[in-house]
Length: 262
Ligand code: SAM
Image (tube, rainbow, N blue to C red; front, side):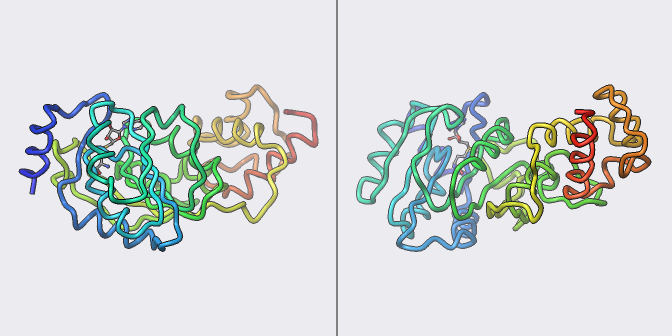
């Protein structure tokens, strides 16, 4: 299986770039499972970030009405347009962190691991129906963790207030060429508003950051060290940040703002 990818790279005269997080999927079955999970219909416009050699693209284009690819590596310029010329495919050559995204219904991508966070939060600013995305396994575990679980983190909270996420399946590192040093996992994502209203977004983000910077400290101490505020008498002051749900953090934030502490 690896041979096909190696041959394609050879034909294009390319060496996988570490800087661009290039680990190409060598197993078409995994791409097919990802696309299956995305439930793409023939009315959908699908966004793929980082198509690379097109292993995943090949499965997407068979189902989608239209596919938009964003690829940073100029080496794939002619290759992608040529290979998928019989489908409705637009290739945007640029950095997915910089370019404006077109309207799309679904996003299906094997993201470069080194920019998972900024890409995820940029995606979550867009208006779309759902996504199926591959991440480094440990990152995916932090993304989907709920309160009380060992991987519950700042990432879990900040994702959970923007989307419903679930871990779908793991992908062993041997399924890529070159193999990364870590395994991967495929996550489903459905953007949604939280069940509670966040009135003070910036303060919320700031408080979440400090609660997890000092996750083993009580909230009273975490916010004293992190933000220099005295939370005496406020809800949850004796708890640890890692034990508060996103909604409870919101209650704390509202209390901090109401008391003019932040
Ligand atoms: N989708 C392909 C696959 O599954 O085999 C390649 C996945 S590889 C992990 C990541 C891809 O993202 C590479 O093609 C790389 O060139 C591209 N890439 C890296 N950084 C990017 C960025 N900032 N914007 C767009 N594409 C990027």
